[in-house]
Image (cartoon, rainbow, N blue to C red; front, side, top):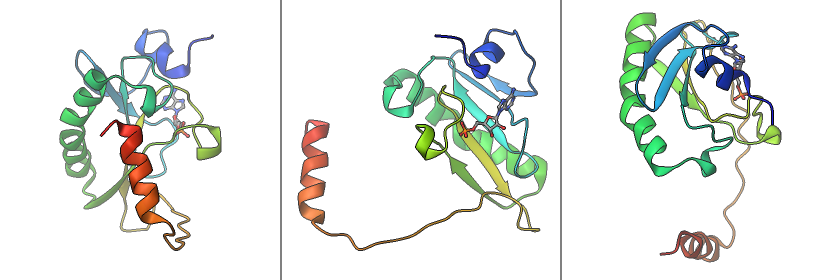
Length: 137
Ligand code: AMP
């Protein structure tokens, strides 16, 4: 399969505005930011979706993500932000290499818009048991 645009960035084939790099993680500015400071955090491991990512890469991202959020807030002056992480085309994933969006919420309102339609939780006990079983607990 052809390399994704993020793999090409990792390979150094196309440029990015890099803000952070370590052995497992790269962070750079989104090319079409929804607010100033919109940053993408990606593992170097070429997993398409989060459920496919190794524990090692997941831990590496988890270790640095809050620090990156603090830096984005400090640099932009924003006080609030969203983390967005899309998996699969119907869930709005456009680039099939795991990535976390850090999206500052500007005072102007610029930032992530969320269409949230809550429903009632039915069969919660059964569902919780089923998910727990799938975890192997
Ligand atoms: P998603 O819909 O979660 O897959 O988001 C993909 C994100 O990648 C979008 O916000 C794009 O603006 C961003 N993007 C695509 N190409 C590049 C690039 N070359 N450099 C930085 N960000 C990019």
